[in-house]
Length: 296
Image (cartoon, rainbow, N blue to C red; front, top):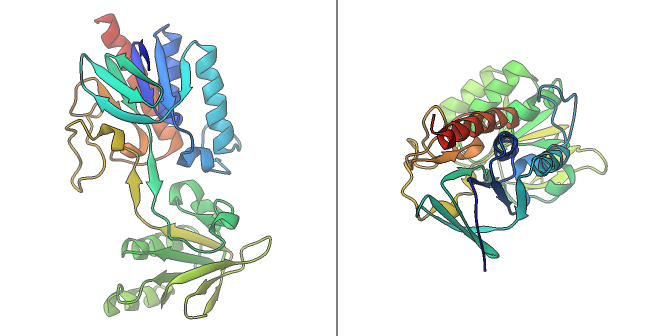
């Protein structure tokens, strides 16, 4: 097994990790970035709210970032991180090697817990969305269905009506919606159905959602409201403080976790999960780590 040391190890090639690597490598710091592939940003077909980029795909953004960090001397490795230990700084183990550094940045994001519905892959990120901040704009003036598994979806429906479209149908599992809540939706012109989505309909364009009971709900776009799981299993050996709901990692305003010199970026930490925000966090952390390495 290969063993290497560096100034900073970065786990995850999302916008935050890549931007941190750009800053650190431009200070001529030795950086190793480990990434197993995939990720929410890479799967985004259209990114339109990133300053300076009229429109790009997540894949293009990430691939360009990888080329950038390599051009400045950072080392990129496609490896799955098995474990992280706080030993003489940080020791990171993958299936191919063991890496040591005094500083560690984790930017490995989350996995969305999406239901298995026929046709999901066909329309995902084209007419089926999961992020209001990223893609809510694409529902403007369209016939929208919102699917979810909690009352968070109801709050989403009210928000979507205020910002984007008045034509909304909310579909939740039976028994989840209190009667008085359904009345509030009706007062705001939001249709509600109890049911289980089974299939997304349409050939080249989304035309509707079919429920398990056979009902077909006409729509042009779908917004999903489901929970997610953090990609943080490699950090299980560390005693990291979590936020109030016990999931996201608690950090200082400078993104440092309860373990000194370990920084968490993007969706791993509490706050808004946006590519451009994560990139800003990466820049800030890269500058801070360099200051600490300088001893200033």
